[in-house]
Length: 346
Ligand SMILES: [Zn+2]
Image (cartoon, rainbow, N blue to C red; front, side, top):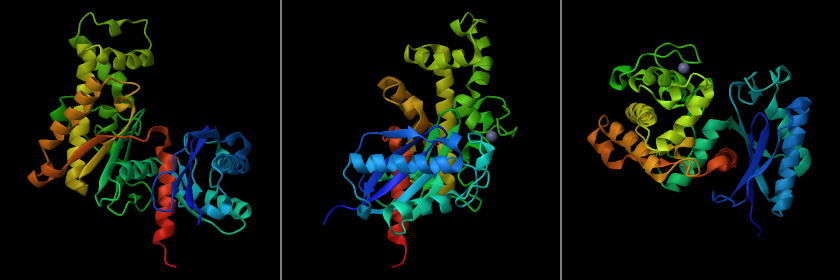
């Protein structure tokens, strides 16, 4: 009997990616397949682009529709309800209220010649599902994924492998929880979300770095980043390189980010009691940072967290770097499709 597969689509605002997993949940090894999402063509154009990308992927790997058991779709939030998109920051207004679930199911049924199961989810949560799967395999354990980038993404994956969505699909918005600022010795920065209580996102991701840099510069007189001709973004982007060279100010800022992340790890350990945290984002990307830098960053996250968790949790808590890179959300979508199909009756 030939293999069967679950396909995952990771739909970004500009490009969409395809990946697959086998029926046993193992990741099907494939190069990154990426195609334009086609949002300029409206919902119809997007469906066409996704189906075209799937067709290319299947042709490349000699897959037949008879071998496809289900499809998962990872979309950026926010969603109005399961399968219906709300206008997000990245999509034109014509997408507001689009029933993507219905339209994609139709297109899949037409292509496969039979109804196929479709699982939809938030892209960050789907990425977490994949990283959790990669981190613990078939072990039963709770996993939290934290991904600092331009903002801070988070996902909780329970021991069955499913992610926590919440009742309005806004679960695990950990980026906008309040950080214990007195332990970080920083002031409350107003977050992009409008909250003024000191959202974790401002102390763990690129979002708050320009403000933290402004606060830190007076402590480092004559620093190269004090140059007024440098743009705000330019200055922040130089920080990572400076940290690799041992620059005191840059290290101070990334240490602050690591400490904030460690406090978040401790708070989430109090809430969810997971035994594994997976840290994603540019700071742990082997192509972007040195091993010394990554060890320092992850080490400080862990040592901070360990100060606050229960003794029994100390013994089991693992904090590891993400490993799947750009394919994680497409792989996660395929894994969720598999979980949904395999756990449904009949
Ligand atoms: Zn916020």
